[in-house]
Amino acid sequence: MKLNMAEEEDYMSDSFINVQEDIRPGLPMLRQIREARRKEEKQQEANLKNRQKSLKEEERERRDTGLKNALGCENKGFALLQKMGYKSGQALGKSGDGIIEPIPLNVKTGKSGIGHEALVKRKAEEKLESYRRKIHMKNQAEETAAVQFRMRLKNKQDEMKLEGDLRRSQRACQQLDTQKNIQVPREAWYWLKPEEEIEEEKEEDEDEYKSEDLSVLEKLQILTSYLREEHLYCIWCGTAYKDKEDLSSHCPGPTSADHD
Image 1 (spheres, rainbow, N blue to C red):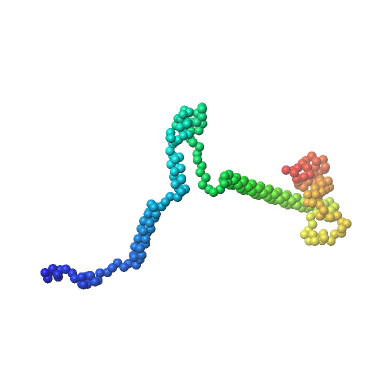
Image 2 (cartoon, one colour):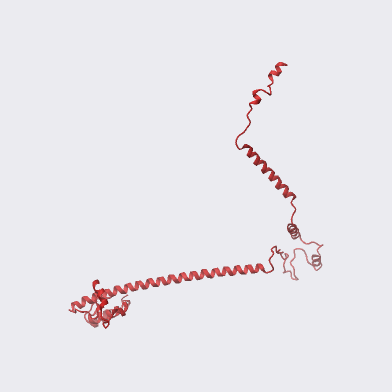
């Protein structure tokens, strides 16, 4: 008897008192979260089972069920068609070229009036058309601006070319006049003036001929004609001819375009 009591451990011994519980941080909180999720899922399942369907849902289910089932003899309209010789799956009409399937049922669920959808569709089309017109006008404006920019650039390049041709003609006129001992040019702008003399042009008398009234093209035409008549020289050919006959027979013309 004593041996058996010695073999059994006393519940007041250290083996029972010093047992350590699992007190890891966060463990009780995880258990509570899992338990709460299980309760929530069970409640959702119970709600789905006990939830009553709304009137719209019941109407939709009955309508879908009715549309899935073909008409039977109990339907008065179908019975009348059978009396007139109609068979299930046959097309309507005396010659059998009518419809086979019934006209589809379009259920209107919104609160808007009849024709509202068509109005919304028309407004959307008008909005889209307005957007397309704006894009088209924008593209046209950009294309016009690009064309105008190219024209301005071309005009500027042409103007720079004319100014270069005029300076070349003035330089040639001054050299040819000097070879003929002409000390003063026929017009002041016939010769290319030094930069220091540009400021002195403002002090000229009002009665004196002003070259500012002429454009660069007009100056070039006048000076080209002077060089051809007075010196038998063509600025475009870069050649001084022997006489007028030699000039007219070998020179293509008095303009730059004639020499292209």
